[in-house]
Image (cartoon, rainbow, N blue to C red; front, side, top):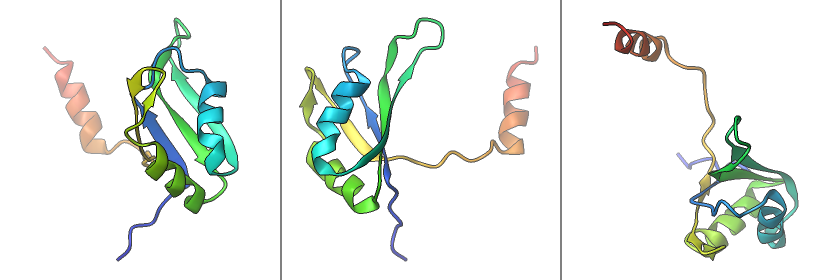
Amino acid sequence: MAKRLCSELFVSRLSFYTTEEGLRRLFSPFGSIKEVRLVKDPSTQRPKGFGFVAYESEVEADRALKALNGRIVDGRLIFVEFAQARGPKKAADSQEDASDNIG
């Protein structure tokens, strides 16, 4: 069975100086971008070094991934991969977390 691509990319190892606008400029030559998100620390509002870029189509996302994965951006080697859908936490995971806090 063929693996289904998605139109959202996960970008890691970003420089803390990379901005959402800079990320948009970097990824825009490969297609129409729906959204760019840099993940920031909630208390300091400083970037955590990773983010997401969502395209209109899977083909555009694939083109950007192939062109930008392993490139140097703002002095850092970045990694680009398809974003994984985050599902709800399993009950077993919750129980393990709870047992870690005991004792």
